[in-house]
Length: 233
Image (cartoon, rainbow, N blue to C red; front, side, top):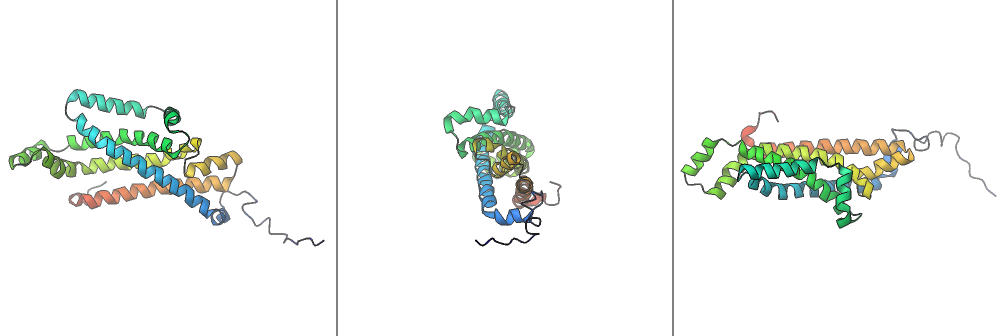
């Protein structure tokens, strides 16, 4: 019977076998797994922010109709944000099951809280003199909103998207409790098995993703508000 000959240094030279924190071999051998986790992370991020924006913008407009509506909407939004993420997942879970929808809806509610406040603050910050001038030249409510108020409120709106984006990247990892946490799945699995390379790689990718999202939204803000170029973000 032939016995395979293994080089004496082959095991010692393998950072996976040594279970090192920094291990390029892990990235090389698990690239497809990392890519799938990153794609799921991005999916949750985009859908959560979309829900926050699509629902949050009309709520912000509603809140500005009267002081009591503003108190009601902002109070409800603040209440949602005080709910711990795990508890919010549990509240959504009976209706959506162990699916990615559970994570998206829960994090969409969190981003909604931040975006509503950002939109309200931005619209409230539009100078009344500018609004009066627009009305004076014949701008109706709809035209005033989209051509005057929203453009001037964009810095505040996108600033809220930046905060919501970075926080959503971080909170998505908690979705691992329902097996849909993107990079969080790898992070918590690595912690359970003490697989250090997986823990570090998933953590670093999560941080880099948060930086990338923030920079992308900052670039979007500069592109949409050219009159503010040169003003500190």
